[in-house]
Image 1 (tube, rainbow, N blue to C red):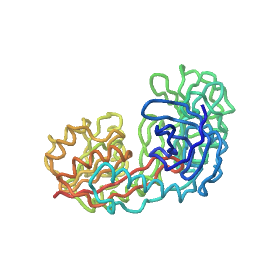
Image 2: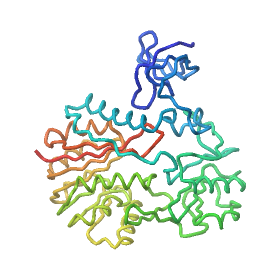
Image 3: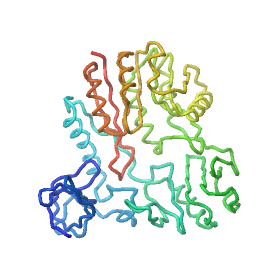
Length: 399
Protein backbone atom coordinates (compact mmCIF):
# COMPACT_ATOMS: atom_id res chain seq x y z
CA UNK A 1 0.00 0.00 0.00
CA UNK A 2 1.16 3.53 -0.80
CA UNK A 3 0.92 6.56 1.47
CA UNK A 4 1.61 10.27 1.20
CA UNK A 5 3.56 11.52 4.23
CA UNK A 6 5.47 14.54 5.54
CA UNK A 7 9.11 13.94 6.51
CA UNK A 8 9.82 15.35 9.97
CA UNK A 9 13.53 14.61 10.46
CA UNK A 10 16.31 12.12 9.64
CA UNK A 11 17.28 9.09 11.71
CA UNK A 12 20.83 8.02 12.58
CA UNK A 13 21.07 5.97 9.37
CA UNK A 14 20.24 8.94 7.15
CA UNK A 15 16.64 7.87 6.50
CA UNK A 16 13.67 10.20 6.58
CA UNK A 17 11.19 9.79 9.44
CA UNK A 18 7.40 10.04 9.05
CA UNK A 19 4.38 8.46 10.74
CA UNK A 20 1.84 6.16 9.09
CA UNK A 21 -1.25 5.54 11.21
CA UNK A 22 0.77 6.53 14.26
CA UNK A 23 3.62 4.10 13.51
CA UNK A 24 7.11 5.54 13.02
CA UNK A 25 8.25 4.91 9.44
CA UNK A 26 11.79 5.09 8.04
CA UNK A 27 12.07 6.14 4.38
CA UNK A 28 15.29 5.73 2.43
CA UNK A 29 16.48 8.88 0.57
CA UNK A 30 13.78 11.16 2.02
CA UNK A 31 14.72 14.53 3.53
CA UNK A 32 13.12 16.73 6.22
CA UNK A 33 10.38 19.13 5.05
CA UNK A 34 9.55 16.96 2.05
CA UNK A 35 6.10 15.61 1.20
CA UNK A 36 6.54 12.24 -0.46
CA UNK A 37 4.68 9.19 -1.69
CA UNK A 38 6.03 5.98 -0.16
CA UNK A 39 5.64 2.22 -0.45
CA UNK A 40 5.88 0.20 2.79
CA UNK A 41 8.54 -2.53 2.39
CA UNK A 42 8.60 -3.80 5.98
CA UNK A 43 5.80 -3.59 8.52
CA UNK A 44 5.72 -4.31 12.24
CA UNK A 45 3.82 -3.08 15.29
CA UNK A 46 6.73 -0.87 16.36
CA UNK A 47 7.98 0.55 13.06
CA UNK A 48 7.76 0.48 9.27
CA UNK A 49 10.39 0.70 6.57
CA UNK A 50 9.50 2.23 3.22
CA UNK A 51 10.91 3.18 -0.15
CA UNK A 52 10.50 6.55 -1.77
CA UNK A 53 8.09 6.37 -4.74
CA UNK A 54 7.69 10.04 -5.63
CA UNK A 55 8.64 13.44 -4.24
CA UNK A 56 5.61 15.73 -4.13
CA UNK A 57 7.28 18.64 -2.35
CA UNK A 58 11.09 18.73 -2.55
CA UNK A 59 13.48 19.89 0.15
CA UNK A 60 15.59 22.93 -0.81
CA UNK A 61 18.59 20.92 0.44
CA UNK A 62 18.10 18.08 -2.06
CA UNK A 63 20.71 17.80 -4.81
CA UNK A 64 21.06 15.48 -7.80
CA UNK A 65 23.36 12.58 -6.82
CA UNK A 66 26.60 12.55 -8.81
CA UNK A 67 26.63 8.73 -9.03
CA UNK A 68 24.45 7.03 -11.69
CA UNK A 69 24.12 3.92 -9.45
CA UNK A 70 23.03 5.81 -6.34
CA UNK A 71 19.35 4.86 -6.47
CA UNK A 72 20.11 1.12 -6.46
CA UNK A 73 23.62 0.60 -5.02
CA UNK A 74 23.93 -0.08 -1.28
CA UNK A 75 27.34 1.59 -0.90
CA UNK A 76 26.34 5.23 -0.29
CA UNK A 77 23.26 6.79 1.29
CA UNK A 78 23.96 10.53 1.67
CA UNK A 79 24.63 11.59 -1.92
CA UNK A 80 21.32 13.46 -2.22
CA UNK A 81 22.69 16.08 0.23
CA UNK A 82 25.46 18.62 -0.35
CA UNK A 83 28.64 17.82 1.57
CA UNK A 84 28.19 20.82 3.87
CA UNK A 85 24.68 19.61 4.75
CA UNK A 86 26.01 16.08 5.23
CA UNK A 87 28.60 17.35 7.73
CA UNK A 88 25.91 19.31 9.58
CA UNK A 89 23.75 16.17 9.76
CA UNK A 90 26.64 14.09 11.15
CA UNK A 91 27.61 16.67 13.76
CA UNK A 92 23.98 16.99 14.87
CA UNK A 93 23.71 13.19 14.97
CA UNK A 94 26.53 13.02 17.54
CA UNK A 95 24.90 15.81 19.55
CA UNK A 96 21.51 14.07 19.55
CA UNK A 97 22.95 10.71 20.62
CA UNK A 98 25.12 12.15 23.40
CA UNK A 99 22.25 14.34 24.61
CA UNK A 100 19.73 11.47 24.54
CA UNK A 101 21.81 8.69 26.07
CA UNK A 102 24.21 10.48 28.44
CA UNK A 103 24.35 13.38 30.89
CA UNK A 104 27.41 14.86 29.15
CA UNK A 105 27.23 18.55 28.23
CA UNK A 106 26.83 18.67 24.43
CA UNK A 107 28.90 21.88 24.38
CA UNK A 108 31.89 19.55 24.80
CA UNK A 109 31.25 18.32 21.25
CA UNK A 110 33.56 20.18 18.88
CA UNK A 111 33.30 21.05 15.20
CA UNK A 112 33.41 18.04 12.89
CA UNK A 113 36.69 17.41 11.04
CA UNK A 114 35.82 17.07 7.30
CA UNK A 115 36.94 14.50 4.77
CA UNK A 116 37.58 14.48 1.04
CA UNK A 117 34.18 14.36 -0.63
CA UNK A 118 35.11 11.81 -3.32
CA UNK A 119 37.87 9.29 -4.22
CA UNK A 120 38.91 8.75 -0.60
CA UNK A 121 38.70 4.96 -0.23
CA UNK A 122 41.91 2.96 -0.69
CA UNK A 123 40.03 -0.36 -0.72
CA UNK A 124 37.01 -1.71 -2.60
CA UNK A 125 35.32 -5.10 -2.49
CA UNK A 126 33.50 -6.10 -5.68
CA UNK A 127 31.07 -9.02 -5.91
CA UNK A 128 31.19 -11.30 -8.95
CA UNK A 129 28.42 -13.41 -10.47
CA UNK A 130 27.97 -13.10 -14.22
CA UNK A 131 28.80 -9.43 -13.72
CA UNK A 132 31.06 -7.46 -11.35
CA UNK A 133 29.90 -4.71 -9.03
CA UNK A 134 28.32 -3.95 -5.66
CA UNK A 135 25.32 -5.48 -3.95
CA UNK A 136 22.01 -3.74 -4.45
CA UNK A 137 20.74 -2.14 -1.25
CA UNK A 138 19.37 -4.84 1.12
CA UNK A 139 19.87 -7.51 -1.52
CA UNK A 140 22.37 -10.02 -2.90
CA UNK A 141 21.62 -8.87 -6.43
CA UNK A 142 24.78 -7.44 -7.99
CA UNK A 143 24.66 -4.00 -9.59
CA UNK A 144 27.22 -3.80 -12.42
CA UNK A 145 29.58 -0.87 -11.79
CA UNK A 146 32.02 0.74 -14.22
CA UNK A 147 33.25 3.50 -11.91
CA UNK A 148 32.81 4.20 -8.19
CA UNK A 149 33.05 7.85 -7.15
CA UNK A 150 34.19 7.30 -3.56
CA UNK A 151 37.19 5.06 -4.33
CA UNK A 152 40.68 6.09 -5.40
CA UNK A 153 40.74 6.49 -9.20
CA UNK A 154 43.49 3.86 -9.38
CA UNK A 155 40.91 1.32 -8.19
CA UNK A 156 38.61 2.30 -11.05
CA UNK A 157 41.48 1.92 -13.52
CA UNK A 158 42.30 -1.56 -12.18
CA UNK A 159 38.60 -2.50 -12.27
CA UNK A 160 38.54 -1.61 -15.97
CA UNK A 161 41.47 -3.98 -16.60
CA UNK A 162 39.94 -6.77 -14.49
CA UNK A 163 36.83 -6.73 -16.67
CA UNK A 164 38.98 -7.89 -19.59
CA UNK A 165 39.74 -11.28 -17.99
CA UNK A 166 37.59 -14.37 -17.48
CA UNK A 167 35.79 -14.01 -14.13
CA UNK A 168 33.88 -17.30 -14.32
CA UNK A 169 35.57 -19.01 -11.33
CA UNK A 170 35.77 -15.86 -9.15
CA UNK A 171 33.12 -14.81 -6.62
CA UNK A 172 34.72 -11.72 -5.04
CA UNK A 173 37.53 -9.29 -5.83
CA UNK A 174 39.26 -6.98 -3.34
CA UNK A 175 41.36 -4.11 -4.68
CA UNK A 176 43.69 -2.14 -2.39
CA UNK A 177 45.86 0.78 -3.46
CA UNK A 178 48.28 3.27 -1.94
CA UNK A 179 50.18 6.17 -3.48
CA UNK A 180 52.77 3.90 -5.13
CA UNK A 181 51.34 0.41 -4.75
CA UNK A 182 48.39 -1.81 -5.71
CA UNK A 183 47.09 -5.26 -4.82
CA UNK A 184 44.24 -7.41 -6.13
CA UNK A 185 42.90 -10.37 -4.16
CA UNK A 186 40.78 -12.80 -6.17
CA UNK A 187 38.49 -14.98 -4.05
CA UNK A 188 37.70 -18.19 -5.90
CA UNK A 189 37.09 -21.89 -5.43
CA UNK A 190 40.34 -22.72 -7.22
CA UNK A 191 43.88 -21.40 -7.58
CA UNK A 192 43.74 -22.14 -11.31
CA UNK A 193 42.81 -18.75 -12.75
CA UNK A 194 43.86 -17.27 -16.07
CA UNK A 195 44.99 -13.85 -14.85
CA UNK A 196 48.32 -13.45 -16.68
CA UNK A 197 47.00 -10.33 -18.45
CA UNK A 198 46.97 -8.44 -15.14
CA UNK A 199 50.55 -9.20 -14.08
CA UNK A 200 51.96 -5.99 -15.56
CA UNK A 201 48.91 -3.93 -14.47
CA UNK A 202 49.03 -4.58 -10.70
CA UNK A 203 51.97 -4.75 -8.26
CA UNK A 204 50.67 -7.72 -6.26
CA UNK A 205 48.12 -10.41 -7.18
CA UNK A 206 46.82 -12.88 -4.60
CA UNK A 207 44.31 -15.72 -4.88
CA UNK A 208 42.31 -16.78 -1.83
CA UNK A 209 40.96 -20.35 -1.74
CA UNK A 210 40.91 -21.46 1.91
CA UNK A 211 44.22 -19.61 2.24
CA UNK A 212 46.12 -16.81 0.52
CA UNK A 213 48.47 -17.67 -2.37
CA UNK A 214 50.68 -14.95 -3.81
CA UNK A 215 50.74 -15.13 -7.61
CA UNK A 216 52.93 -12.12 -8.31
CA UNK A 217 54.51 -9.31 -6.31
CA UNK A 218 55.48 -9.02 -2.64
CA UNK A 219 52.22 -10.34 -1.21
CA UNK A 220 51.47 -7.00 0.46
CA UNK A 221 51.43 -3.27 -0.23
CA UNK A 222 52.78 -0.35 1.78
CA UNK A 223 50.83 2.80 2.62
CA UNK A 224 51.78 5.85 4.67
CA UNK A 225 49.92 7.75 7.38
CA UNK A 226 51.90 10.92 7.98
CA UNK A 227 55.58 10.02 8.19
CA UNK A 228 54.96 6.36 9.05
CA UNK A 229 54.78 3.41 6.65
CA UNK A 230 52.52 0.39 7.12
CA UNK A 231 52.45 -3.03 5.51
CA UNK A 232 48.99 -4.14 4.41
CA UNK A 233 48.63 -7.89 3.98
CA UNK A 234 45.75 -9.40 1.95
CA UNK A 235 43.64 -10.21 5.01
CA UNK A 236 44.76 -7.53 7.45
CA UNK A 237 42.77 -4.51 8.61
CA UNK A 238 43.90 -1.06 7.55
CA UNK A 239 41.94 2.19 7.59
CA UNK A 240 40.16 2.42 4.23
CA UNK A 241 40.65 6.20 4.19
CA UNK A 242 44.33 7.15 4.51
CA UNK A 243 43.74 10.91 4.62
CA UNK A 244 40.90 10.47 7.12
CA UNK A 245 43.09 8.24 9.30
CA UNK A 246 45.72 10.98 9.36
CA UNK A 247 43.11 13.50 10.56
CA UNK A 248 41.85 11.03 13.17
CA UNK A 249 45.30 10.13 14.48
CA UNK A 250 46.33 13.77 14.72
CA UNK A 251 43.36 14.40 16.98
CA UNK A 252 44.37 11.38 19.11
CA UNK A 253 47.92 12.79 19.20
CA UNK A 254 46.59 16.15 20.37
CA UNK A 255 44.49 14.55 23.12
CA UNK A 256 47.28 12.28 24.39
CA UNK A 257 49.77 15.22 24.47
CA UNK A 258 52.49 13.03 26.00
CA UNK A 259 52.67 9.84 28.01
CA UNK A 260 55.24 8.00 30.08
CA UNK A 261 53.47 4.66 29.82
CA UNK A 262 50.67 4.25 27.24
CA UNK A 263 48.37 1.27 26.63
CA UNK A 264 47.10 0.90 23.04
CA UNK A 265 43.99 -1.23 23.47
CA UNK A 266 42.52 -3.04 20.43
CA UNK A 267 45.71 -1.98 18.65
CA UNK A 268 45.13 -3.89 15.40
CA UNK A 269 48.17 -3.63 13.12
CA UNK A 270 49.73 -1.00 15.39
CA UNK A 271 48.95 2.13 13.38
CA UNK A 272 47.80 4.39 16.24
CA UNK A 273 50.57 3.34 18.64
CA UNK A 274 53.28 3.85 16.02
CA UNK A 275 51.80 7.25 15.16
CA UNK A 276 52.03 8.18 18.87
CA UNK A 277 55.48 6.67 19.47
CA UNK A 278 57.33 10.01 19.36
CA UNK A 279 55.40 11.46 22.29
CA UNK A 280 55.44 8.37 24.52
CA UNK A 281 58.19 6.81 26.58
CA UNK A 282 56.75 3.28 26.45
CA UNK A 283 53.75 1.74 24.63
CA UNK A 284 52.15 -1.68 24.98
CA UNK A 285 49.60 -2.75 22.38
CA UNK A 286 46.99 -5.47 22.93
CA UNK A 287 45.20 -7.18 20.07
CA UNK A 288 43.41 -10.55 19.99
CA UNK A 289 43.97 -11.18 16.25
CA UNK A 290 47.34 -12.94 15.92
CA UNK A 291 47.72 -11.97 12.25
CA UNK A 292 47.22 -8.31 13.14
CA UNK A 293 49.88 -8.63 15.87
CA UNK A 294 52.29 -10.15 13.34
CA UNK A 295 51.68 -7.16 11.05
CA UNK A 296 52.05 -4.76 13.99
CA UNK A 297 55.52 -6.14 14.75
CA UNK A 298 56.48 -5.84 11.08
CA UNK A 299 55.22 -2.25 11.04
CA UNK A 300 57.15 -1.44 14.23
CA UNK A 301 60.38 -2.68 12.67
CA UNK A 302 59.62 -1.01 9.34
CA UNK A 303 59.42 2.36 11.11
CA UNK A 304 62.39 1.63 13.42
CA UNK A 305 60.20 2.16 16.49
CA UNK A 306 61.86 0.76 19.62
CA UNK A 307 59.45 1.71 22.40
CA UNK A 308 56.43 -0.51 21.57
CA UNK A 309 55.70 -4.12 22.54
CA UNK A 310 52.67 -6.06 21.28
CA UNK A 311 50.72 -8.73 23.14
CA UNK A 312 48.26 -11.11 21.47
CA UNK A 313 45.41 -11.38 23.96
CA UNK A 314 41.87 -10.31 24.72
CA UNK A 315 41.41 -6.65 25.64
CA UNK A 316 40.26 -7.61 29.15
CA UNK A 317 43.81 -8.88 29.85
CA UNK A 318 44.90 -5.36 30.84
CA UNK A 319 44.78 -6.04 34.59
CA UNK A 320 47.90 -8.23 34.18
CA UNK A 321 50.10 -5.48 32.73
CA UNK A 322 50.88 -2.99 35.50
CA UNK A 323 50.25 0.75 35.54
CA UNK A 324 49.58 3.14 32.64
CA UNK A 325 49.07 6.89 32.76
CA UNK A 326 47.20 6.91 29.41
CA UNK A 327 45.03 4.38 27.60
CA UNK A 328 44.00 4.73 23.95
CA UNK A 329 40.94 2.64 23.05
CA UNK A 330 39.80 1.87 19.50
CA UNK A 331 37.26 -0.96 19.94
CA UNK A 332 35.08 -2.66 17.30
CA UNK A 333 31.61 -1.33 16.50
CA UNK A 334 30.21 -3.22 19.49
CA UNK A 335 32.32 -1.10 21.86
CA UNK A 336 33.97 -2.44 25.01
CA UNK A 337 32.66 -5.52 26.81
CA UNK A 338 31.84 -5.42 30.53
CA UNK A 339 35.03 -7.22 31.63
CA UNK A 340 37.25 -4.81 29.69
CA UNK A 341 35.50 -1.74 31.12
CA UNK A 342 35.70 -3.20 34.64
CA UNK A 343 39.42 -3.90 34.29
CA UNK A 344 40.03 -0.49 32.74
CA UNK A 345 38.43 1.18 35.75
CA UNK A 346 40.57 -0.95 38.07
CA UNK A 347 43.63 0.10 36.08
CA UNK A 348 42.61 3.73 36.62
CA UNK A 349 44.78 5.62 34.09
CA UNK A 350 44.90 9.42 34.41
CA UNK A 351 43.68 9.85 30.83
CA UNK A 352 41.61 7.83 28.36
CA UNK A 353 41.38 8.64 24.65
CA UNK A 354 38.46 6.73 23.14
CA UNK A 355 38.16 6.31 19.35
CA UNK A 356 34.71 5.11 18.28
CA UNK A 357 33.11 4.07 15.00
CA UNK A 358 29.63 3.80 16.54
CA UNK A 359 28.21 6.72 18.54
CA UNK A 360 25.53 4.55 20.18
CA UNK A 361 28.00 2.14 21.80
CA UNK A 362 30.26 5.10 22.55
CA UNK A 363 27.43 6.76 24.52
CA UNK A 364 26.79 3.51 26.38
CA UNK A 365 30.45 3.17 27.40
CA UNK A 366 30.82 6.86 28.29
CA UNK A 367 27.89 6.53 30.67
CA UNK A 368 29.87 3.97 32.65
CA UNK A 369 33.23 5.74 32.42
CA UNK A 370 31.69 9.12 33.28
CA UNK A 371 31.16 8.03 36.89
CA UNK A 372 34.94 8.04 37.38
CA UNK A 373 36.16 10.24 34.51
CA UNK A 374 35.32 13.71 33.22
CA UNK A 375 34.69 13.88 29.47
CA UNK A 376 36.71 16.92 28.38
CA UNK A 377 36.04 16.95 24.62
CA UNK A 378 34.31 14.96 21.90
CA UNK A 379 35.35 15.50 18.27
CA UNK A 380 33.50 13.95 15.31
CA UNK A 381 35.78 13.00 12.41
CA UNK A 382 34.29 12.30 8.99
CA UNK A 383 36.06 9.40 7.28
CA UNK A 384 33.20 8.06 5.17
CA UNK A 385 31.76 10.82 2.99
CA UNK A 386 28.44 10.04 1.28
CA UNK A 387 27.50 7.57 4.03
CA UNK A 388 25.89 8.05 7.46
CA UNK A 389 28.95 6.58 9.25
CA UNK A 390 31.01 8.83 11.51
CA UNK A 391 34.10 8.36 13.70
CA UNK A 392 34.43 10.10 17.05
CA UNK A 393 37.41 10.82 19.31
CA UNK A 394 36.90 11.58 23.03
CA UNK A 395 39.34 12.54 25.75
CA UNK A 396 38.55 11.69 29.39
CA UNK A 397 40.43 12.68 32.53
CA UNK A 398 40.29 10.93 35.90
CA UNK A 399 38.15 12.76 38.48
